[in-house]
Length: 527
Image (cartoon, rainbow, N blue to C red; front, side, top):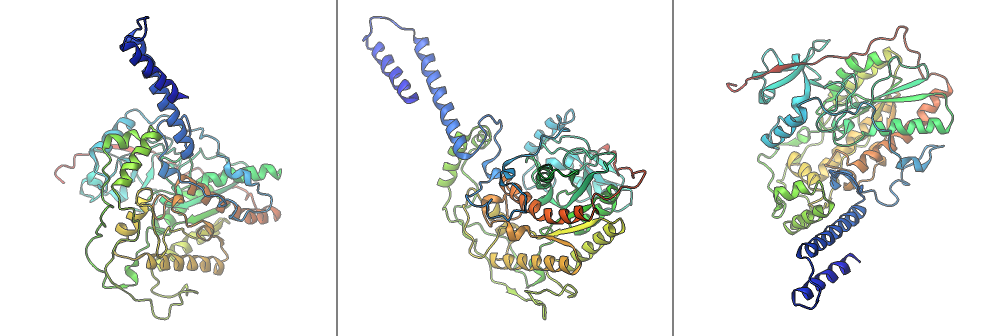
């Protein structure tokens, strides 16, 4: 219909120019009619593309289609549901955060300015200027710190109560950051913490790294979905309890950072349960490779920088139609291969006497730092045991398998993480070690009577559920939450049945370990 109107108006305009009409029309009126027709046509096309992409019709800017991810038919039904769980809950979202607000004055403009000035390859990124850095980590002179000396003239600092340099930072408390992350009074992602905690509140704290805090741009992390669905389940079963699910994670944490966070930040909250999810930041294959090849990854032809101009990439965040144009240019610039990049030969030396299918937890030289990780898990268990809290350990999902072929445009970040960040290791060896790590986690949980949540075993190996090889798209975040929720329900039911949850809180309740960052000005040019 829109095309017909445009064509009819064009014919009439030509006819009038040729004198076919006795009535002289207004040139401006015809031009306006043509313009309105074009605008309507583009608007209809934009709406159609958004519907096809599964994107909201009225969102500005658009969530990145790559960030969103796409669920395939049958994936939700393939996840085992706990008794009494309604499939329809999967498609519901948590309530909007009550503490979402505009960023503090000047933060948004500083963030945008830093995005223009700082290279994407720079280790110090715009988000880092809004973190509160641990003074024991920063040292007496941050300009002498190899990382913090890159700060653009200012930093926020805090003094750790235990004097330790780990964790190196906390998120600034009680703000909405320029990248849309919302923090509570602890500087943790999410809604305000209930103070005082109610007698019928079950408190669950998730801990880990970037795969738990999830993308700052995402409206919710996977623990927030877990809390949302647990409360729907409690309401459906008419249980006299409320679930408060909190997220203590932050990017770049290794197992020791996580253990220190549990000790200094989580224990004062007296949680009923702490859930651990991490397995990427210490995942290094050099522990089983003899003479690791030197050099850097070499991109195959067609996998280099896109030919898309900067203005089109920026505009595609606001228009799904222009996003299709951008994708078309990207496909034209690609060889559409998507296979594993060439890697040099190397020799895998599996530790002598270590059973790959049934790992010995006490083996002295386990691959991928698993001896240290176990020691940190032991610290967490001991800390939680001292206050009567439970512990749950999750398997860790990697988007990798031998022979994996990816879409080189949509799954570019998976390709780059597997082939650049994890160079020179082959997919088959990454897959092998990821499975071994999860077997060890499962055995650790079994031996130490810890609940085990098998995220990796249930999550479909689908690149649309991932941003890169370990981080989740929006669809993947929802799936991880759904898997975790369903596997937690039986554990929760047992505790409700024996009346061990909710655990009673001390009276008076311990104060939250909050903190107040201080702002400093830096001049590190000499450094």
